[in-house]
Amino acid sequence: MNTFKLGFLQVWTRRSRLFIQWAMVCIGLALVSGFFTFEKSTDAQLVNDLSSIDQIWCAKGSPLQGLLANVYHIDNPTGNISLSEVNEYAQNPMIERVTRISYGDVYKGRRILGADASWSDLYSLNPTEGKLPENEMEVALSKALSAELGLKVGSTFHGQHGNAESGHEHEEDYVVVGIYENTGTVADRILLTSLSSVWHVHHSDEESKEITAALIETTSPMALFQLPRLINSKSTFQAVLPSIEVNRIHALLGNTQSAFIALSALFLLLGGLSIGITIHETVRAQQFDHTLLRVFGLSPFRLALTIWTQTLLLLGSAWVVGMLFIKLTIYALSPTIAVDYGLELQFEVMNSTDFKLLAVAIILGLIIAIPPVIRIFKTTIHKNLKNA
Amino acid sequence: MIDKLEWNSLSYSYNQTNTISFPDGRINRGEVLAAIGPSGSGKSTWLQLLSGILAIQKGDVHYGETSLKGTSERRRDKLRAQNVGLVFQNNHFLNELSVSDNLSLPAFAQKHQLDSNHIAELANRLHVDHLLNRKPKECSVGELQRLSIVRTLSTRPSFLLADEPTSALDDVNTESILSIFDELVADLNIGVLIVTHDNRVKSHFSNTINFGK
Image: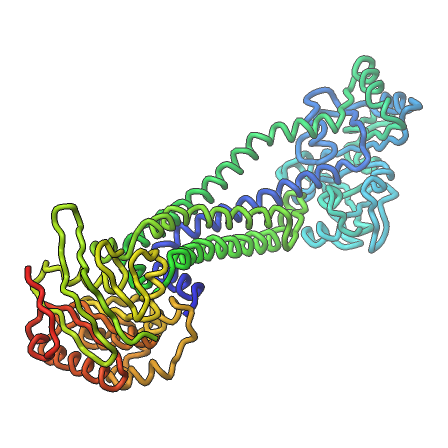
């Protein structure tokens, strides 16, 4: 017999009573860990997808929508802007690089993005098969998307107008000419074609050519202040600063994040406290067990150790199972989430948050054992024999 | 290892007005002493004073040459664990453990190396060796009483103090337990002190102390 075995057997015999409380702690720990992985991944994704884009020129409207639609490709664009006007402002010496993008069609729910050749530089696209699109109606896509859509080099397909799959189908054939490595960015969810393809499909004439947005890299930080002022006052479109809009996203998500963490912590705390209450009740019911052990010579301190063993065993195993559950879930779902939502969940076997959660579990285990331990120290053998 | 358990001028008061006084006496290893008296006569209090569970208010108890008077609870616990084994009327076992694990509890409590051979020998002597792998709930009251004696003797105490060990038993089991006490005294040179109101015990032993109300 040893303290661990005694503690384990005392927990094991009450497993059906403790299971729900233990499961609540598991879920609480798993949710907190999962949430921090999600938060870290979204932060990294926001930065990765932004690449080196300093400004976005797009049709006037919500700046946040402009960012979401033209960089993260998860919202509808605010409209189109004139190509000639963009080209005029693109001559400004404060501009390092302009990447023009245009879209309006989808294939099986995935956006077909017409872009300058420089768009592939933003995300360092590296074709493993074929090449990147150079000519009209040529398309390249990521390995992940190719597997999802069943498209190979040489495959042809028709785009559908608008963002919904119910939009009318264009007659023109797109031809897949290349498949590139997955990048862990928004490029993995896009069917990339040239700007001219989009104009061709939508029968745009030379004079009235429009694009959805221009992604701007500037030469100096000064341009971040001067250029938007110029664009917003003189042009027919707006300049959106991604850094400001990303902060806005963080602010918008902030309350949700806090609520989520509070809810998970509440789960954890309630589970932990109910375990504490059960153990306390058990200690009361086991008073003659404890008397017997004290009669045999077990000190109150060693008896208290059996209680701490029980709470630490419960909280520790909840941490192990909670981590195992969330890690396996992240591992299993991350490919689907990456393809469906464009979020590359950062899978780590263990991270600093997980170790902090272990510390929380241990501290909680030590704290919830305090009332039963006090009871053990306060009760004498004589008192227990009288009550038994 | 002590050879005698001695007490003198012992009295105890649960409140200022009601004081119980106990007759002086001593018991050596290899002897049996039965303390007979009705319920409420203070027998259990006396046993708790002798075993160090209760702190001594007046008089003294000596384990060999060691006095219990004025010693801390922790020290009394240690002296009891080293020298005295207790058997109660209601034999309590930890139900989540097997009988065998229950028998190892005194060694665990006293941080002793478990002497499995000694336990097996005792179990064999008391005819309970076939019960070791069972759960306590699967044993009868008489079997549990014999198992509790095995458990108490597992750490080789010098004295065995039994509080109403036969009260819950039928005649057959009572006779069996009393014979076991006789054997233990003769073969293992243990001092046995029994407190009881059971007249069956009174007729079995010649060395008795009577407690009046």
